[in-house]
Amino acid sequence: MTEKVYAYFPGCSLATTARENSQALIHLCRQLGVRLVELDDWNCCGSSSAHSIDATVADKLAMRNLDITPANTALLVACPSCNLRLRYAREKLRTSKEARRKYKSWFGRSPARSIKITTFIELLGKTDLSSIAPKKNNRLKGLKFAPYYGCMLARPPLMHREKNYHGLMERFLAKFGASPIKWSHGNRCCGTFLSVVRPDVVSSMVNSIMNDAAQWGAECLVTACAMCHLNLEIRCNPDTSMPIFHFAELLAVVIDETNSNGFFRKHLIDPRPLLKSRQLIP
Amino acid sequence: MSSISLKQIGLFKEHMANNGVHFSRCYHCRCCGNGCPFLPAFDFAPNTIIRLLQFNLINEALESTTIWACVGCNTCSMECPMLIDIAGLMDGLRQLALATGVPPAEPDILSFHQAVMDSISKYGRTNKLDIMIRYKLKTRTWLQDWQVGLKMLAKRKLDIFASKVRDPALINTLLNTDKK
Image (cartoon, rainbow over all chains, first blue to last red; front, side, top):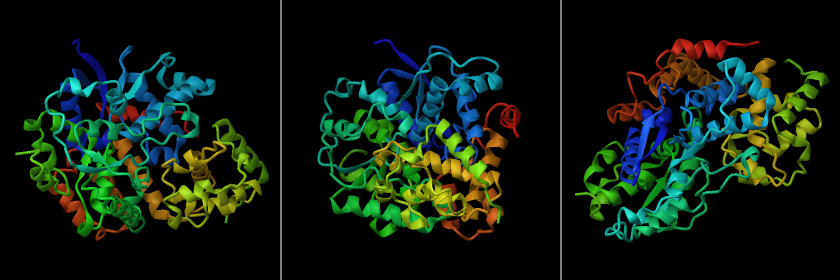
């Protein structure tokens, strides 16, 4: 199998707070024959605060990343908010002459004609996981999980024709024997930055997410976003909390149990008792 | 209180339309508000904000908590049967409030955004520890969340040495070009 190379855009969260997510992702991609080369000198994508208070700054930040992406290399974006911002910028460049003019004035050249942006979820959508883990198909057997997408699959109207990836986490984890619960909070926003300023509002949101998952019998929550992961962990009621996994972490456990223990030490809600009881980690 | 002229309102509507936000399409089905998880933090539901704009009552919209407490999760925009980019509208209103000097109904949220922007101009990336220190300096809320902070430090989730771009000065120059 020829190795595919992607320019990897970790984003600020995965580069720091959620380093374990990034490690799991890189690890898993290696198993899939995909090499991630970190985009050299990447900067903040312009999500949350930049686009909240200054649209031009948000455009500049996102477009600089597009500008430094090597030609003919697809950008693999790890964080859902970064993905949204970068795609939004790309869409703007595609549809607006004014945006292209500004781009030229900022970076001294016209934007590349086609910029490929992909996410981990899309990459997996094209991959046949059973080919790399044929013998371990039932390792997650019986694990009841709540698939939590938060706002990551939401597409603003400008992007409403893009593909919808709902159900992907369920499909992949079910391949390894885990059973997704059906619940109503799978697309509920986690509260993002409001967690800092209005913990009262976000705590009640997070608890309603956790309680709904518990009510339908979930043992853990699976998310694909580092921001969601952090908010769920810090704002939930400790008495009703349950472990939260990054999607890539669970897949990494299935495919190669020996290397994955390191991720779980960094969780604020310790998932190791659950994983041990399922004999997923030694 | 600053007041916005009809001409400015017209310009704003045009600016929004150029960015694909067409709120005159709204017929107030309220799907946006029903889907919104932040409704308890709002004084006006999203469609009420749109109604205010339809009546040119833009000051009321700019003074609302709604435009500050909206985080842009796009749930409303996904619910909207008329494809109105409601999260984009909130961004636009927030920026108009800043440009016209309307005091924010949630000043701490603005302080947080400013802390993030300061961190970006210093490192080219965001650094959570740096942002939190800046935010706490601005709001003097030192006691809030200190336990969470310590736990995150212990788990090495807050980096003392910030991850940054090679030359933050270049990012700074970029951010300051053609600034009005």
